[in-house]
Length: 564
Image 1 (cartoon, rainbow, N blue to C red):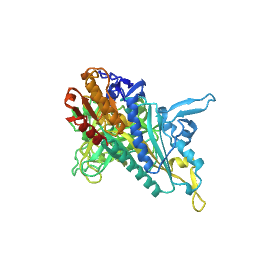
Image 2 (cartoon, one colour; image 1 turned 30 degrees about the vertical axis):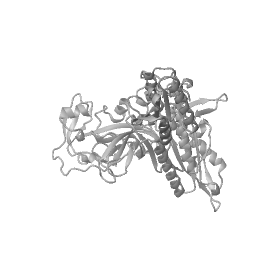
Image 3 (cartoon, helix red, strand yellow; image 1 turned 90 degrees about the vertical axis):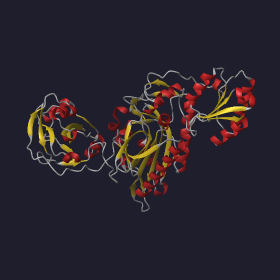
């Protein structure tokens, strides 16, 4: 491709709306342009990268034996009502009615549609197993689109669905997809981690793993063991129960004034206590019912764990008005002895000389011991893991990393097949429920995820497998016949050899060309300048910055080796 003909405008200034590196660089390098909040147009360079990512995904998923289909974007809302997921997705779904007043949605995912398809088509065990997948645009009405393609309202995704006769077959497909994802990320060239995760709105009670591209720009926190292979999303991560001290205070509880203490920090400062001594109670509404969680002041409630323990569809913090109505106490002054259900985090028993609210505002009880001074009834693992916690398997310390979720694999079991009566006749002619798995991978999200890992102060550093072009040829002066002739000849030869080449034939200053080249981040840059009179060119590797002065033929052979 000749750069003078390329539909490309690079930007010198960092766009004000871009707050992460990948968003800034995708706009500056002319990969995408925003149409409206969370919705982007892919320009030629960005679309070339997306196509390469999706080609790798398609090759590896095809290798598992999965078959590609294309499912409708428009889905009847009745399907989602039938599966029970309209509430789970809520306002995140784009809803509309057609001219006949039929309620429909733009598909955020396709479990319902594909299950109905299989329900209609599969009748016998002889037709199973089946794995169907598609690469398609999805729609989710994000409340706060951010970070460019990392969280948009319109995005590309590969979603696969498996249909099995038994658990063993489901496990086999799950492992095949898991391994395919590993190969995809390794081929692309990113550092990733597969972590245990919560199933969320997709549902299912089997295993589930997320694939995280490691990056400080990620929205997810993952807990990783420093010794064994354990890793989990913070929503799922668990740890060993903390040791209970041998000694407990012999002092009796005493009520003391604590004016103006609205937070754990206020309370610890006023009383001189440690956060681990504070017994805090947080009130939630779970499917409209008030419930309290009691835990240490230095710990945070894990709302996903709470939701799963309660078997609730929706959990949210109770408002101050609800807290007062249900407990008779102000927020921050709720004790664990209120008359609503109270769940206790398992590590509350490590408090041996504690501080807790005493119902009346601006007062607390000191020298409190859980189990001695109030009953600890329902005990669960309800908190986020924290610094100092250890691996539940090998007891080594856990460390925390940030990650961008780019893939998620689920064992759905019969969640959807039961809802849609997707059955098959076994060898005895008896109807059996199909077991399912689903396997999602965000192809458009991979673009910013790659850039977050692969960039420097000058621009993008594309891994060669997904770079929009392999080589950037820059004649320093297009008016110099020898420079332009050599550059054009190399362009023709490399293109004929299957190398993707961008030739900067613009009549621009060298500094502009080199700045743009670093910004675009193609793996190899070949500069044809004044040294061509001696038969030499300059070869620069973008990843490590290495520069070699070579003969034209040496440079040609070097590029073939690098790319092939």
